[in-house]
Length: 400
Ligand SMILES: O=C(O)CCC(=O)C(=O)O
Ligand SMILES: [Fe+2]
Image (cartoon, rainbow, N blue to C red; front, top):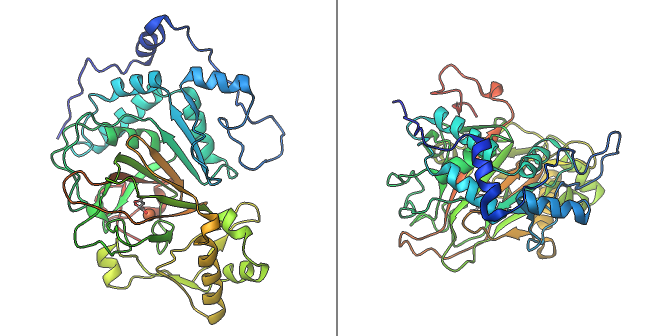
């Protein structure tokens, strides 16, 4: 079916920005074109950032330009920025008429990308690009203060699509900003092949080690660790928090965890002695016990470590491998290393699925339609590897 674009939607960046910059008689922010943290030939330095690094003057430029660091997040694995009110208003205006991704995904993706490119501050785009491309950028990027739909229907009770949702602001934020990281995609065997997943507590699944659970900590994992076709990045966008503001999305960078392991454990985790089975959220594949080939948990050069594990579904194939995995679990669950974000509406958490593991704490759902509601998108740098003649679309993988 074809989607009609509303002709009055302000997708002309220049005119929309002119409108915004003259509001309230404010002076136009100076345009900042040089990368603020990288000098030609400069050696790689850990955790460079166009936002948290740099001078005070540069910080002022960023505030004028629409984003600033969020210093309330005390996590070494997460870079946090927030949009200021003017930037949020502009982006909100751009997305008011966003078309449905459920009617035409490609039209919605094109619209969302164009709206994001036109509306969000230049420095946010720079921050997103650095996050996507710089091996030393942090493992997660939190962007706060993004637009959410003015009116939301009830939180889906089954983790499926909210059919009563008639505006598509949250989907447009997700699909627009994730396209600065890669190509959004899904899997036929996960959430019915949807590209935008709804993450909500599901009655009867309270104890599940999956995104449907609530009464047990959802243990540290990378997304789809069993699959060679897993996402490079995942994006979690908060539409509603839990009632008590209790739920924590936990995070730890692979590099930080690795540095705390004994050298012999590091060596053991690099051996191809680990298998991972499909976790609970992949219902049919989990039931049939689909599993990865034996492979290492730790990959990559020293200083740029990648981890591939799910503490609930990865097993060592030798006693030494199993002991090393348990040592890794002890580091990840060490309370002194705990890092987390309590997601609020308008928060977009982007996680590099190679550089950071994540999980979730317990919380109490009420099943009253107002429960915690996140939407999630996976991205891949390249859709080619997932190609298949039988897949329903190039964005939906039917191989794992
Ligand atoms: O609910 C959360 O905060 C995280 C859930 C999760 O791990 C996921 O959706 O991949
Ligand atoms: Fe997850």
